[in-house]
Length: 251
Length: 383
Image (cartoon, rainbow over all chains, first blue to last red; front, side, top):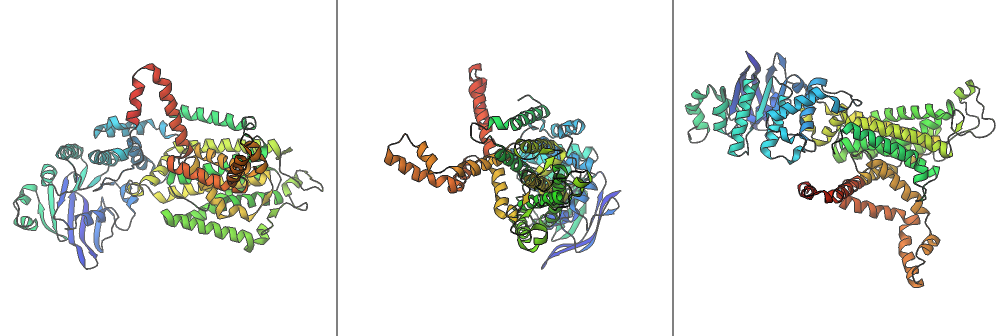
């Protein structure tokens, strides 16, 4: 069953056709990788899913509802969480608060004026946030200020912030960009565990090691159009894909 | 260190209340133990606590909060004129009207962030000032300021058979005159309540969201949170605090003038908050106290006092010392304040509270130094 359905979307920036009649079906419970050379339109496509960009034409339907024309916070409340290329976290707050905030957002909605009861009394949520941090390997750092973490740890924290909301769909924009080999492998393991819980994921990635370790299905984007789609083993041998990646370098 | 945050908050609140209530005795040695000045400490403390909920938590720097202070004062004086000389309805209405004004100005100003937000609030405050000063003279009595009149209707007072006769009335709480110490204690109790409420907000999930607004609005949006109503709620709450403070100014001295809304007054509360420590609970109150102390004590220094102070020096040196230092007192007290502000912003960006915290940590390390090696490693990890 398809959870996210993208039909015929086009996006033009001035003279550049960034997305050209893109169709995409994301199956529930799968890890779907979107790969392609720089400038292929991968991030533009992802931005169309979360309300950051509005496609010129076409539809984006998530879980039966259109995601177009609504605010980013409404899209998240519908069950879509996003991890950014550069980790977006609350740098001045503690790790625990970083995870508590999305937990409150999930429970209390987009806005609630709960200024009386102390956050310290929300034992159930605090315990859950603590478990989430432990789950991504940051349990011992719960009281530290998030801005001081290494890049790999920030990424893990951002994942914990998304996972505490139990999203139906998790979007990841180059989750291992700029990471060391060790951090990359840790992140792959973590994402595998997340996937095993049944969270549907869309991953944009350059690192083919990451893609082929994780993806159930791959779509290849080049110059704003999907040029190939299928199982990882089919994509590996696809000629058009190797062409798109310049000179047919072996994947 | 091992105290639970809620317990620590309670202790801070109790100490805060004790210091405020004992202020007339505690501040006597530094020449501030008289009700007129103590009232100002309390009232501007309330103003700064409220401002800090906006600026300290969400990071939105408003340069127009004096407008809400002024609106609160006008509302309170009109309440005295029309309803009753009792301060309670006056401050309740001042709070509500201050909040309503803040809702309108905040709704428009919060469409922008950063410097553009600050400029919008500044523009609104200057518009309010000009409206009060000239255009709305029938309501504000223009440059003379809004005053009480023997012929005011005071319908509630009349209904309850309270007659002030031929004298100009002053505000009173069921017969207790709101001048002198009763006036101060009225403000002091309100200050303690305001501090308590701010403390609750700081520790609540709502307060956490306001900090998130300051930290990363983009992440907030993609986390399912609507940042706009959070920022607006903080703006309105701080406007209500300002309205309340304006109302209390009118309670202790039933007069409202447009100069209360001028941009210098808006700038003053920014200084108070930064001086004391933006984002901290106690900082704004400290900053407000310090600035009002300087304004009232340093500005009262004159050459006679300075001559007496430098009496121990030979005569020529004494004259030179007085000539230099007199620049910094009396009319020149702003110069002292400016120098102090610069020193604090450069060396203690977290304000006086950062200084106090560093001092406490330093004393803690020295005090624990006899115990063994453990405290010696603390400064390294902290650095």
